Amino acid sequence: MNMKRMTRLAASAAFVAAIAAGALALPESMFPAVAEEPKPAAEAPKPPAITVVPAVRKEVVQTAIVVGSLVPREEILVGVDLDGYRLTDLSAEEGDHVKAGQVLARLSTDMLDVQLAQNESSLARNDAAIAQAKSQIAEATAIEAMAIAALDRGQSLKTKGFVAQDALDARESTAKTAAARRDAAAQGLALAEADKTLTEAQRRELQLRVSKTEIKAPTDGLVLSRSARIGAIVSGGGEPLFRLAEDGAIELEAQVPEAELAQIAVGQPVTITVQGIPNGIKGTVRLVSPKIDNTSRLGRLRVALPPDVKVNAGAFARGTVELARHESVTIPVSAVVTTAGEATAQIVVDGKVRTRPIQTGISGKGLIEVVEGISVGDSVILRAGTFVRDGDAVTAVEAPSEGAKG
Image 1: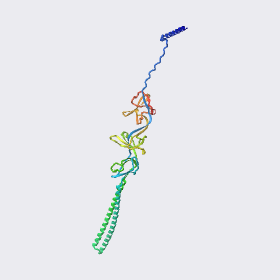
Image 2: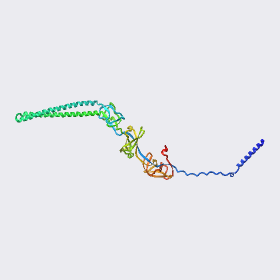
Image 3: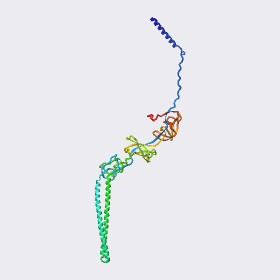
Image 4: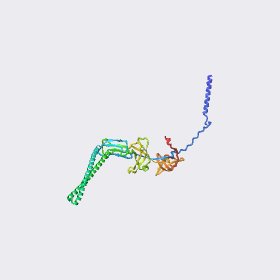
């Protein structure tokens, strides 16, 4: 049984192998052809991509940057009019706000006190001399009156023959002498009064010197610096003892190129940046110099700061001056090409580049005003004149907005 089974299995295997060999030997024409997929047609290349931005109506602010230092609007120098006096007291320090008439320092008055005492004595002597002169005038006037009366009687008696001529001459001489003494006494009074006037003038001078030993602030202000030292001998021709900023007013003084200076006017707003102050200070143009330096071609500009701002004189500051503000059609500055004074911009219309002449206005913060030549919504090439020419076919790709960039 086993042998028969094995024989049948061997015959079956041989039959399968024969069928397989026959199938492999069949010609290809006996099998149906398999259809191949058609190859896709070649696509036309796209025009090069170009970045565009839409022209929009927006406010443009044109500014100018100025740099300089903070200085007092008016610097007041406080010195002395006396020489050789010692400074004995100080009542003000740098940074103090002082009022007009406030005592800042004092000088020694010892020498002046002695001179005033001497002057007081001289005035007493003058008063005594005046009183004595007046007494002499009164005495001389009385003697003169008696002499005149005696002369009158003598002249009356002479006509009657009772008085000799010699006696009459004596009486006349006495009368003249009395008049002379009265005149001399009057001159003595005038001299005594003149001496008193001189002494009084000297007293006023001494009192003025005493008042000047108190060094006072001539106006309200901020003490910027103090060179006064207790014990120092002051001199009228020396360095000022104090420097004040009148009313505490501090300004930005800047040197500006003449081209920009011509666009700046008094009253224009200015944003001032000072190191250490996080927020910008709002100022106003107070003065525009009418003169340009012949060498540097710069002009002077003064910007007033608010009175309550806390800044240090001498600090470096930067100011942004607003020159003009317009709301108009705007495009990026990079979209404008200027050739021989003529401005142009490129826009994309129906996939084609078109170059348009434009009339521009003010510019600021990367934008420029277009007065004529561009309308709101036009697709303006962001960087004109660099990659494409008029008539080129392009694929417009709008630049991401500022919000998208963030």
